[in-house]
Length: 429
Image (cartoon, rainbow, N blue to C red):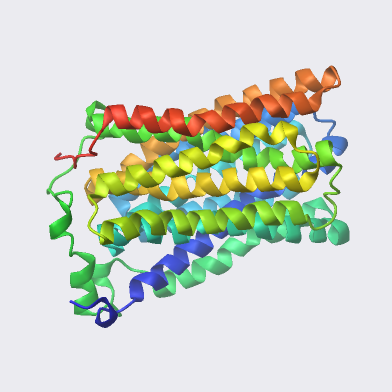
C-alpha cells in the first residue's frame, strides 16, 4: 500500500495535539516569566518559589496516576476535555491570588489538570498511528511544549507591561477554551471517525511486520502493571530526566536574569532561541528513530541508538560555568534542551512499543508520575542550592552544580533502562 494513497487525517489529529500541548506549556510557563515581579510583590525567597513549583509537581504526579487510568476507562475525547477545562480554569485563578499559599493552591490545581495532557495525547497517537510513525508524530505534537515556551517569553512580558501580571494569567488561561471547540468538532477515534478512509484505517493497523504489541481483550488490574519489568524501564527513564526539563522551564528565566542581567519585562531573545531549538530537537528526535525503523532497523535498536545520541548531546551543558557571555550559555543550554525533547519524543514512544493500547494511558500516567516525583524532589534541591549560594554571594556556583546534575542524568537513565529491558520486548498482559 502506497502511503501517498492512504490519506492523512491522522496528521490533522496531531495538529490538534500540538496546539493542546502548546497551550499546556504556555499556561505552565507563565509563572517562571513573572517570577521576578511576583517575588518582589509577595516577598518570595528562592525556597518559597521551590515550594510553589513543588506544589505543582506533587499535584501533577498524583494527577498523572489518576488521569492515566481514568482516560483508559472513559476514552481520549472526553478525558482530554476534562483535563483541559480543569487546567484552564486553574490558570485563570492565578489572577485573583493574594498570598504565597494561594499560589501554591492554584499551582496544585493547574498541575492536576495539566497531568491529563500526555496520557491522553500518547494514547491518541497509538490509536491513530502505526508504530513506525509514532515517534515522529509524538515529536511533532511534543514540539508544542517548546512552542508554548517560545510564545510565553514574547506574549507574557507584553501583557505584563500593558495590563499587569493578573491579566497575563487570565488571557493565557482562557486560550484553552478556544482549542476545546476544535477538539469536539474534529476529533474522534479512528473506528468512529467519518472522515478517515478505509485505506488509512488499514495503514494505521499495519504493524504486523514490527512485532506489534498484542491487543488482548479484558480489563487490566492497575496494580498488575507494577510487577512488569518494562514498566520500571519507563518509570526510571522518566524519573531521572523529566525534572531536568522542569528546571529549564521554571528557572532559566531567573538564571539569565541573575547571571547575565536579562530584562524579563521585555521579550527575551535568549529564551526564544532556547525553546525554538527544543522544537527542532523534538521533531528531529522523533524523525531519527522513525527513519531508522523505516530503514529496517529493529524497533528497540532504533529507539535506543537515538536515545543514546541524545543523552550524549546533553553532556556539554556541564561546561556552562565557563560561558563568558550570555550567547555561549544560550548555545549550550539550547543543545541540552533540544536533546531533552528529542529524548522525550522517543521515551514516550517506548511505552507504546512495549504495552498494548488499552493499558497505554495507565503506563504513561505511572511513568509521568515518576517524572513528577523527580520534579518534586529536584526543585526542592534546586531551591536550597540556589538559596545557599545566593546568601554566600556565589549564585552562579549554585547554577553550575545544577548544570552538572543535568548533564549526567540522561546517560545514567539510558544505562539503567538498557539493563532493565535490553530489547524492549512487548508485554503480553
